[in-house]
Length: 381
Image (cartoon, rainbow, N blue to C red):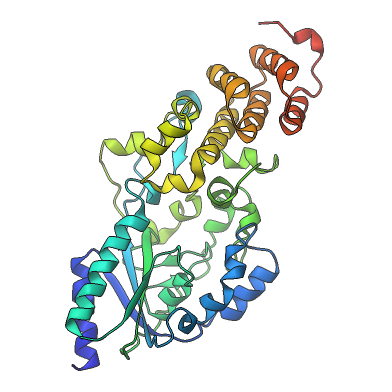
């Protein structure tokens, strides 16, 4: 069959499965391979060491599939954030990035990609396919720009004139020679709205993101303690961050979703979350993208957001976590949060916790939270 006709059929299959964006690129070294390697060398990946380990495969797709000839790049839109935002400080709610709603997108996209591969193999008997979402060792954003799905914006997301940036990327490697698509022009122009929107300054003019300053990195990828300097900038973000997408003009045409369930999912009530046991968290989030952060990470983040709220109504649940949570990481962040709220009741709970806490890391957080406070406050209301 003619390669042009095969490509046309693949685009039609993709649209039917929920991928309105579909482009083709040659399976060779991507144009930003050297820049990616330099970014890793400079430490911009923070603690994501798997990126270093898989560098060879990321810059050479034929290490993933020896006879790969074409990379099919696919874009699947997801719902944009619904508004208005809740008054999170008063309501004690955290915020979840929109892409994490519902069933884990890896599962959803994976099933669609398997079906698409099946259709391609039926169309061209003997063809081999290997699909990947963002968990695979593929530079999907690079390939998306090469295959004409969009251009890389200053917020480092792929921007599309039709889809904005609220869309998932996926790739399929095939051992077929298919006609490549031309890249689209870069269309950010002089716009720099995304740069000041980042509260931690993680973005730069040269189209780089420093994960060491990224809220998404700290609330999702990082295991362990969030640095004290980062915690206030987390604001109300429980999982991820999309501030740099919200201000992007290329997202202004996307309509907000109006499903009532989205409020509870996008802005969960933090005291309830912080009280979830390991088993309860597994039941609720095992099939969600939030599972990536695990129960300890989500509870840690909930404590940080509650501390950032400054709301005295959060004291009881934070004190409960400081007293009973099995994770020293969660207890340490609960101590910090009580210090941020700094009511007399919060300080009293910190003093009482100091008397029973044995973990040095947690004790250090309690001491830091109590810094400058006289012991005479212990027991006051």
